[in-house]
Length: 109
Image 1 (cartoon, rainbow, N blue to C red):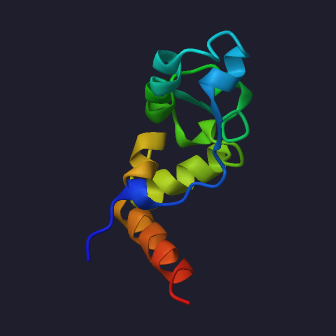
Image 2: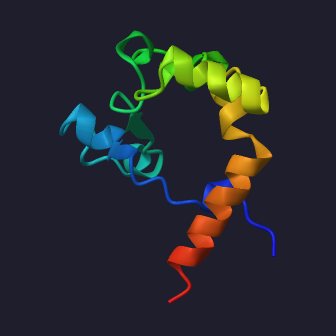
C-alpha cells in the first residue's frame, strides 16, 4: 500500500476561507465563490520571525524556525539524520514512515 503525505491529517493547521476573510464584498458572485482560495494561519507553528514568510521560505529555514524546536534540538537532528532545514525534516523518510503508520493506526478500529 502506498501513502501520500497529502493524505495525512494536519489538525494543527487552521484553515479559513479567503472569501470569509474578505467579508461580504463578493457574496453574490458565483465566479468569486468558485475560485475561492484558502489561507492557512501557521503562526502557531513557526517562530515569530517566520510568521510572515512564504511556505517556500519556511521550507528553506532551519528547523529551529518551528515553534518548540530549539537550536540544540536542531543540532541533534543534524547530527542524527543530517536534517538542516524544515524541508529536510518534512521529507525525511523515517519521519514520513512514522507519520504514515500513525495515520493507518488511527483508522484501524
